[in-house]
Image (cartoon, rainbow, N blue to C red):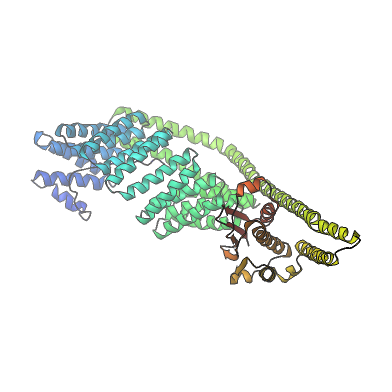
Length: 632
C-alpha cells in the first residue's frame, strides 16, 4: 500500500478536541471575524467524515464571508478546507482546483508554511493520479522553501515522499535511496530519532525490492531497535512483518516465524486486532510451507473468529485462501472446498461492493457539482456494473474449476518440492559423512603405516642387526625390545583406547593423568563442567571426540614445544564446546591445511563426522587455539 506523509501545515491554533460541534456552530454567529472563521474551519474538519453535505455548506459560507482583500489569509484557509472535503470524497480534480486557489493566495501573502502545506497536498494528488514526474517537481519546490526557512522536520517528510515515489512507483531504487538518506540527514538536524526509524525501515524495503538481502536485513534491524525504543509500535510491527516476508522469500522461513510472532504479540498488546490477525495469517502461511500444519491450523481457526467479528474482509480473504491450501495439503478435501467456497463468495461480495462504491462516488460528485456530464458517467458505471455482474455469473463456474485445479497443483507442488528438498539434503548429508569417514580412515591408515615403517620396523631392523653380530650388545637389544613393545602398545591404544568404554569423561581423565605422569616439560590441564559430565555419548561419538583431543595434544607435544596445554569441555545453547589451547610456537593454519597435514586433517574430518564446526587460530610465537562446537 502506498504511504505518503501528508503535510497539513496550518499556522492557526486549533481548538481543543473537547469542543463539540454544537459549541463550534454557536461560534459561527460571532461578529468577530477571527473567531467566526476559525469556527468554520474547525467545523469543516469535524464534519468532513460525518456529514459531507453540512461540511460543504459551511465551506461555502466560509468562502463567501472571507472574500475580500482584508481577509485573504482566511479565504486561502477556506479554499484549503473545501479542497480537503473534495479529497475525502474522492473528487481529485475538484480538490486540486481548490488547493491551487489556496496556494495562489498564500504565495501572494508570502506565507512559507502555508505554501508548503498547499504544495504538498497537490503533490499527493499527483501521486494518486499517477503523475509522478509532476509530483516530484512539486515536492522539490517544497524542499527549496523548507531549506530556506530551515524547516528540517518538513524537509525530512518531503524527502521521504520523493524517496517513496522513486522506489515504490518508479522502481528507481538508487534514487529512492539517495532521497531516503537526505531525509535521514534532515531528521538528524531536527533531532527526530523516530523519523529516522521510519526511514531506516523504508530503506530496508528499498534494498529488499532490489534483492540486496543483507543490506535490507541490516536496515530493518536498525529500524526495529529505534522504533521499539520510541514506542512506535505500529511502525515497529510493520517492520517486523516486512522482515518476515524477506526471510520467507529467501527460504529462511524459520527466521520469518520469529518476526511474525513478535509482530502479532505486540499488536495484541497495543489492541491492534486487525494487525494481529494480519501477522498471524502470515505466520500460518509460512508454517504451512514448512509443513507445520497443525500449528498453522490452530492459527487459522483463531484468526477466522477474530476477523469475522471485526468484519475485516481483506484479512478473511487471505485466511480462507490459506486455510483452503492447508486442508488440501492435509488431505481434508471437504474442509478445503468449504473454505474455497467462502473465499469465492467473499470475493464476489467485495467485487459487488466495489462497484457500488464507484456508483456512490459518482453520485456524490453529481450532487456536489451539479454537472450534467456526471449523470452520464453514473449511467455508464451502472451499465458497466450490470455487464460485469452478468459476466461474473457466467465466469463463476469456470473460475471455481480453475481455482480448484490451481490449488491442487500448487499443493502437490509444495509437497513434492519439500519432499525432494528433504531427500536431497539427507543424501547430501549422508554423502558428506561418508566422505569424511573415508578421509579419516585413510589418514589413520597412513599414520599407522608410517608409525610401523618409521618406528617399529626400524627398531626391529636395528635389533636384528645386533643379534646377527658375533658379539651382540644384549643390553642395547633388550632396551630396543622394551621400547618396541611400548610402541606396539601405544599403537594398539591409538587404534582403540582400552578406557573408551568407561565413557568420554573418564577416558579423558585417564589420558590426561597418564600424560602428566609421563612428560616432564609440559603440563596438560583438563576442565569439564558439571553439565557435560552428566551427558551420555554413543561409542562412535565418544571415540571421535577423544581422538580430536588426543590428536591436538600429540601435535602440541610433537611440534609446538608447548609448556602448557589446556583442554576445556563446556556446554552453550545446546552445543558441546571443545576449547583446545597451547602456548607453543604456533603455525600457519592455511599453509598446514594446504599441505594436508595428517594430524590437522584428522581433527577436521572427525569434526565433520560429528556435524560440528571448527575455528582454528594460530600464529607463530602466539600459540594455538581450536574452538569446536558440536550440536548435542
